[in-house]
Length: 231
Image 1 (cartoon, rainbow, N blue to C red):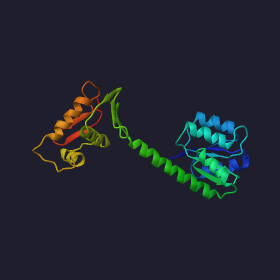
Image 2 (image 1 turned 120 degrees about the horizontal axis):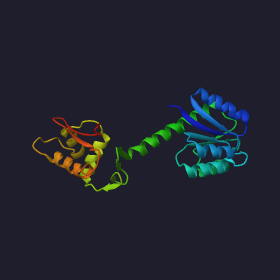
Image 3 (image 1 turned 45 degrees about the vertical axis):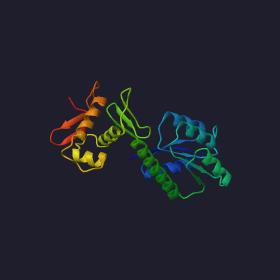
Image 4 (image 1 turned 90 degrees about the vertical axis):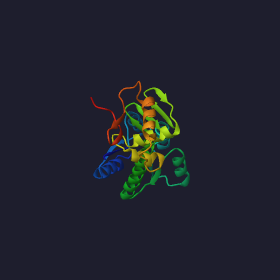
């Protein structure tokens, strides 16, 4: 994956050297040589990580860090500066910076810090994505326990919610009644009971009746599958 980095550094030689080095590590680096241009680039584009010098013309790094964090709570920010006092570091962290590297620095340390922040950002994104399950216009929020189909809120019982969550996490896969019994009811499948079929029908009435496309499908002799039926 090619990560994009915004580097805001007014010393051209340093900025160009950093860009050349990061490009060799397959990072796509855009340079702004002052805070005003850095602000415009940030507002007009999406970046995976931002590196800011503090002593910048027009808008200093602290102000730009604060502005960026107000607009985007997730993008990692590294402050890169010759200011090596504890108070400077604390101010940067309080304004939303994720890391602080003082000049002069070893380039391999900068690369290591970037890699660590991008890994953390990717993990956080994955965790946030897992809180929202979706297929077609059906959405389930695992935090708020809210289910919607289109603009309609769907009210489910606790067990219906668990069943739908399992189907969504296994969307486009056939799940057997035994799979559902084990993962939703946490019991061994009893061939004499039709409780699973009953609950699947409950979901169909709430999620598919009156909606298109139909999402819950029976695979005869195999189980059920949650998918968008192709024409």
